[in-house]
Amino acid sequence: MKVLLVEDDDALAEALAGALHEAGVLVERADSGSEADYLVRTEVYDAVILDLGLPDGDGSRWLGQWREDGIELPVLVLTARTRWADKAAGFSAGADDYVTKPFETAEVLFRLRALVRRSHGHAHPVLHIGELTFDTHTGSVTLAGRPIGLTAQELRLLAYLAHAAPRVVSRSELVEHVYDRDHEPDSNVIDVQISRLRRKLGAEHIETCRGQGYRLIGGDAS
Image (cartoon, rainbow, N blue to C red):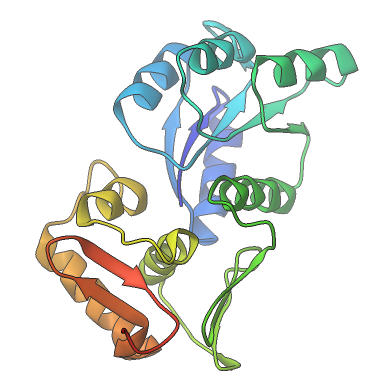
């Protein structure tokens, strides 16, 4: 999962970004609405965490403009404002969910994962692909009931493939959603990481669709 965090409070942003990173979320930051506006129009994200109190205008104004322009990615609003009128303004502008400061990082993570899951058409937090189970809340992976240990990068790769399954995911899509834009890998790196996932999950669970990309499947490819 690749997320844009729009927050001008450096201490809060660093703490939240660090906690999300430990949970397997790739985070890029913007500290103003104008920077966020540029990034959502030029980069690819799975969701945006948006503070309303930005130095160059209310976050809901930027959000409203994105929605008017057809930018539909999920947006979780963060704000210190507690009045219902302020929350209503955020929802009216197009927010998908709302967290009031101060907040628990775990709550932000749960809500963020739920937004991304629903954006991929999954209502339940646990995804099942054959014998493979991926818990989107905890990030845990099991195969036929057996826990599978994954590195943070392997978990990000698997999470994106699991949300997309059974759709084929291209290399370029993986680069856009799984890797930092400043450290984009070449195809050999992706091949190596997919091979490591195959060794842990079983080769039959990740299908290579020649010239198209990869697909997570329940078992033997037909």
